[in-house]
Image (cartoon, rainbow, N blue to C red):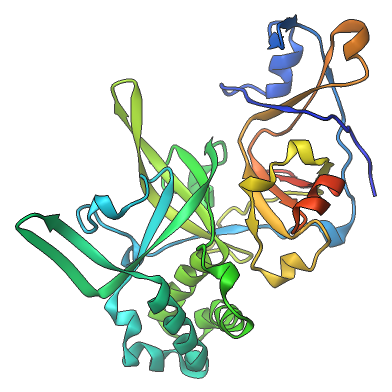
Amino acid sequence: MATGPKPSVVASVILPGADDPKATIKNGTFSMEWGGTTVTQFNEVEIPRIKDEGYQLPTIYLHFLHQDFRIADGLLDQSLRSGNDMGEVVMKLPASYFSAEFVEECKDVKKDVEEVLKALRCQGEVVVSRSKPEQGKADPTTLFFSLKTARPKAALSLDKKAAGIPLDAEQYLFVNNHSSVVHFDDIVKEAFNKCIGSLPDVGSEAAAKFATFLKVFYEGGFGYNKKIPMDKAYLPVNVGTAAISVFPAFEGQTGIETGNPYQLPAPFLPFTETVSISINAIRSMSEFHGRYGVAFTRMVYFWEGDLWAESKTLDFCSIVPNGGFFYVPENLRDHQAKGGLVYAFGEKD
């Protein structure tokens, strides 16, 4: 296995702008206040990559959640939320998807659909749209689900139209799978996997839309926000939530490639910014594929390397100009000992 830098501490810096972060650091105009020392010299370190087809991720495509499952303005009492569209993504499951008619549409997968719906009923909350001293309003036939988001909120640098991303989206964030998923037993997990894999092919439009909902719920995905200016800040408003698939959602859709992964030690990759992987095909790839998260767009890592003591030169690397996934082992001890892998968006090799 490849080896790379082994610093005890690493500073993760997001460089604003549109220029290549590496060029910005190397053009002589950038400086860093490092523990009271002004640093103007930087050494770019080449990070080792694992050139093994068994470690490569497939090209991914975005499949966006249908309007059936989105929360319209005013539908949900905001006091029930744990934050705004920066901190959580809220999805709803309408009554029609709990009906016997829908289950029958799912044909050979209906037993698995029934198992999944039973789990969803236990984890969903009734949609309450009004809560006032004199009056409340609720729809007991519709449930909502809160999916927490990871810390990275990143600027969009990929071609939105080609990838199918809403054109008014200005930032993307990683949507964690529902927090209940890690507690499901094997029977429920198998039912989710069968539904996600088979429902798009049963010949029902509703079943195909439900499969995307389940994919976001069970595997996580990406949320896309527009920014509404408010004085010196902004209000993030979700304009789309996407599941991640290995098949295009429409003809001509551009996929996101990641190429060979970079290998980095634990200080570069925060364990607490990851969630457990529920996709069996990914979990089985290697010892590193236990948990995953998303790296910020334009993230640059700085640390003290061999040149620091003599010339006050900081080492750095810039490997995710468009953001990326990172993967770490399932438990913290292995993460500390072995580090993890970074897959940069937009790379082919």
